[in-house]
Length: 508
Ligand SMILES: [Zn+2]
Image 1 (tube, rainbow, N blue to C red):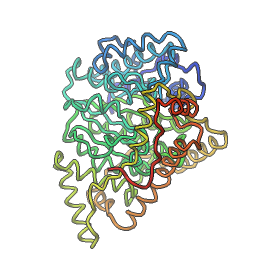
Image 2: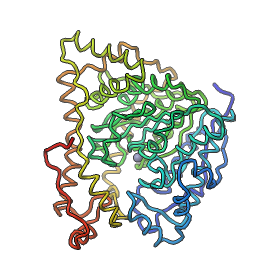
Image 3: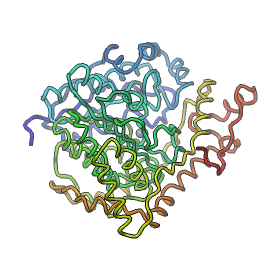
Image 4: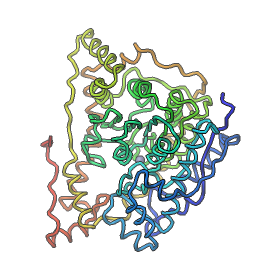
């Protein structure tokens, strides 16, 4: 155990960031308040050091964003201007306090990183909002104003003399802003686990599939629903940890979003990471950078999930006992398909992965199975991307009510599901790594795995396509940023060409 305290940041100025024109926003002030209260009630921060947040100044924000964006955010001094500003943005709301809250989120993240680098704390958690991982350049989006984690990473390198930083993003949504911010920075390694669903999920881009052109980026696109904590941890052992061991970061920043949590608001269409999975991911990051692992809050929307998950993550960072984790005999079908592609794709840069790949291929041969066929990529999102781009270009973005609020019956189901797994928890302080043989045997690619991959991916991908097709056919009111009334009006005026439905033809 370290003699240094755990560090955390919590500052109520960030609660001032609250949407004044729509009370249904999933990213809302209570998220950070409930997380803070939960870890306090669990007595996880009794001996911790509270690091004081402060407003970041322009020069710090400019580490990652142009002055133009900074000035725009400063100028939002009325509710009307705030909503108007978001009419050409993707899933963004702002308010008059956004500038202050966003600066405190950055300043808090920076100060926490500084405390870790200066050996004042042993790991830490910045409970901040607005989140940051979707924002880059002059593009604030996806509830994110400035990219907290990218700025903190660049600050560590530029101002604190840290040689290499790794960012591990396990939020359900693609860390697209972080990727755009750090892709050309070889001193930063970036890992992102994210819903991809063959491109039919936001941000509808091929760029976030596994085949990155950047040796410093690992994408783990999730094409199937309900991958478990055991699946995520398996991917850590197969690829994340070997890559980070080769990269040798001096600091790890976790983009800590909990929306891949089991029964977060997407329920069975989301992911299935139970709370202790977040504890184990944090524990494994700390094994790479002991004492220098800093979590920065991103998403997570069902309070019962995100409070439980955040508490477990902090336990992992504190090296407290965690519930035992089961490493599955096989990785779930759709994630296994992705894993084979990842290991193959990255083996040119990471020799350890090349060694693994040979063992996986030999196993196929020894079992009399056909080899895995690489790079059979499917992309379904081109038409969705085009519609979003057109809607933005015409400044007719729907700025309110993107997600319906969960009815009480559903909230009760989620709570029950989470309570059920908590009953199974057996706490332990020893969590041996899986053996090399165990890891290889998780990767058998046979008929069962193939069909599992298909079944796991199809219902949600079909749902997403149906939703889009219904919208373009006029059979559905609204679809996220696409507003029925504004869309129809623009088509009638001839400023917008109607969009085509997605047919069974895949676009390469
Ligand atoms: Zn998210």
